[in-house]
Length: 188
Length: 189
Image 1: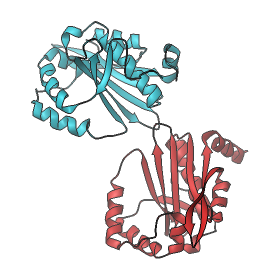
Image 2 (image 1 turned 180 degrees about the vertical axis):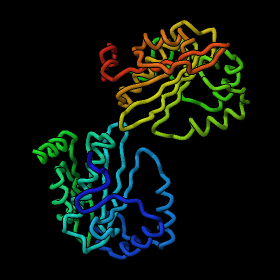
Image 3 (image 1 turned 90 degrees about the horizontal axis):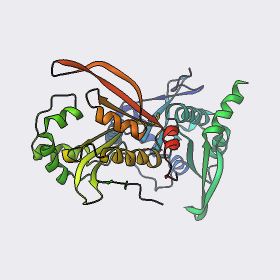
Image 4 (image 1 turned 30 degrees about the vertical axis):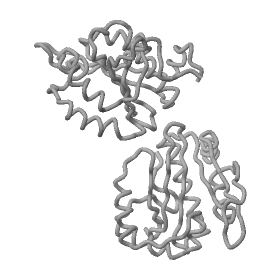
């Protein structure tokens, strides 16, 4: 059986609130990272506030929410996070991820995180589909999601305003059968 | 689209803690009713204690627990309660429990009708894969009703209960989505 929490480059982890807060406070200072990951205004939070938020989230055992910290296998370094929000009735999961440590961008870590996430969503949560949204100005993420098997399903036109220019939000999805086919393809 | 909360004899109504906390103490004065429903030795609880528990359990809008009152269509009288608890979302399995507290409505098809409505809710609204229940060996009326609703016998815990000087089994019954879809003739999705 595959290890649900271990990929080829990264593993899913649970941090102590102190450890996570120390990293997150640095990540938040990187406004480019924020704009790639999120459409909300960039904000800076204190280490204390992040610690309290994270500690509270760690205690959340609701069946709709799953959150992991992400560490590299080689250095055991905390580099990012991944979260899933589940629609229980329709067996659909929304996923979001971020790599706060810039030196780990464009090296396959995000793709490995997402592959691990899909394995968890389809084999552990028994989801029928996984969905995500990505900004048009983040082609690196788009390419990574395509590699994991996501298909571009639609777009909200010009709903993000950045630096005086409007961009689309892109919606991507992968169905259970598509993911299963990819797994079988890998084995043969 | 038909009203999924209405059956032939009863409808499922919103679980109102104010109303239910007054009914439960009255229903629970009947020890036979309690023994048919529960394996534990349950003391009587005051309306205040019931209300406190209900507001916590039924009041929070959890995606896993769904509680209803059972009301007669004829006069809208509240005669019982029914609830479903999704115990395993990845497996999409839930436990169901029901009681008709007003004893003059026993053995008249009200429980079976309420269960039919609940199964429709479970399979078409919650999109579950299976529904499970437990029932005591000394409750043949309930067993017969569940069989009519489509539940099958799946197993039993031997000598689970001690009542009146002898031991009784607890029976496990279940119904799968495909079985229910095959049974249900008047539900379109």
